[in-house]
Image 1 (cartoon, helix red, strand yellow):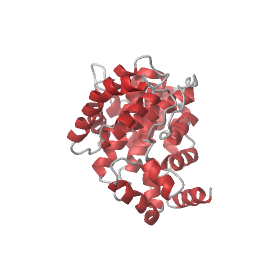
Image 2 (image 1 turned 90 degrees about the horizontal axis):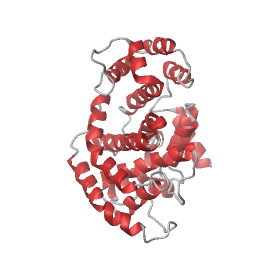
Image 3 (image 1 turned 45 degrees about the vertical axis):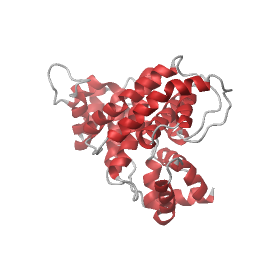
Image 4 (image 1 turned 90 degrees about the vertical axis):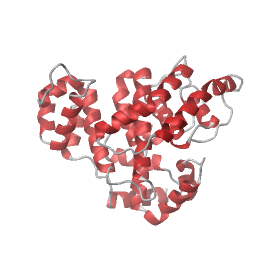
Length: 325
């Protein structure tokens, strides 16, 4: 616990990604109430130029726009609904903070490819498996690796060892390396900081568990289901960046166990569309991705391996050991 507490103290002393502003905190608090006054929400949004710009851009995109574009924040709020407003507001804060906080040792494009892959996959899975919380899944996915940035800047000499070993490895998870070198993972640190930010429990739990391995079919519990969806998205990101590995594909299927009766079709569909959805999201958030051909090739390999993985898993007991992500 001392190492954990010491790292948290350093992050709180010199946060690279600041806590949400008063405007963000107020909007998030207001929109927790499904009966909140949308006019008051719009008024609070208008006080922040960056949030206003992001919200209007979202409301006028092809998915939400009516025949006529709008410049009214209130109209934009009506089009998007509370869940999407919350996602836009928090994602604007996170992307704004992370844009200048790419960890040393990470190529910026690669960093954003991983973050957006998790976020987009979480949203795609959420829309199919837990539609009421799909927008929250997008936010949770974006927040999953916030602990990496926080530790890289708070404890640079120590965390440099983690990044150096991770850069040399083709298979090891950064989570495993962190636990071995530091005794604490970015998932745990991220969850603690999000608790400081007073985010909702299901978001905090999902970030804290996104590298956890499932040991049983998902229980019929909302928070657990949400966390498993986000963890599955983290595996999708791993497949996109590191390439197809049967153990990782197997882990993805285990994360989805009990969530869907047809995981083969779901996984294939999500992975097949992931790169195009990442590009769309990057354009919306004004994030530079760089070349994505490698992502597309890796995911295509993963999709081709789904039938073999599914057949192999059907002959194994569900408690068989699997490699960490």
